[in-house]
Length: 197
Image (cartoon, rainbow, N blue to C red; front, side, top):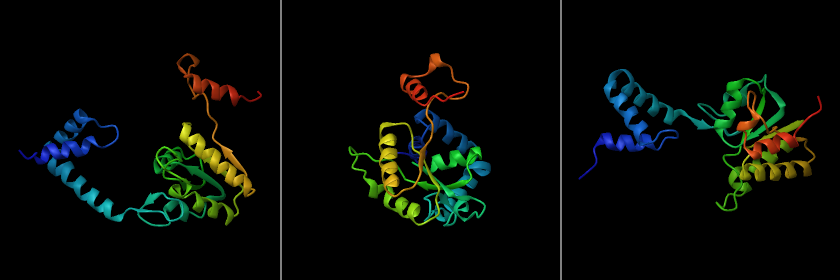
């Protein structure tokens, strides 16, 4: 027996991050109940977006043009380059509005187990960008995972050899966090990065 279009749609939604089968079923049911006001405009918008979004040739961001709106913005501080793992990380920085430099999206992390090397992440392109511009600082903003730390170490060594200042995001206690609820890794990072007051 062939699966219905509804079941296929539920399975497709369940592939989205944060949605399991039950959440996907609820989302599809909501769309079906509101076909004209939500489902049809969403379908049209998704088709349009899939056709118009491109990867920025400079930084790796997703936008409707290349270079993206961030790379094209002449008011950005081009002496600062922030290296992030994924586009979602870049978007998180932009949501906060706290960083006014430019970016480089790696597209993942180094992983010997998964066979991901520097060339797979565009690290040679990062080195070209770093050498060919007036950068004063490269901020490495990879995640505090084993692969993220390995990637940060590799990039910092390569940039150090090129004579470019590198910094790393601080790791440790979040604002409003309570010590009793922190894991040992977070406490250790916070203790190692302590500062004078």
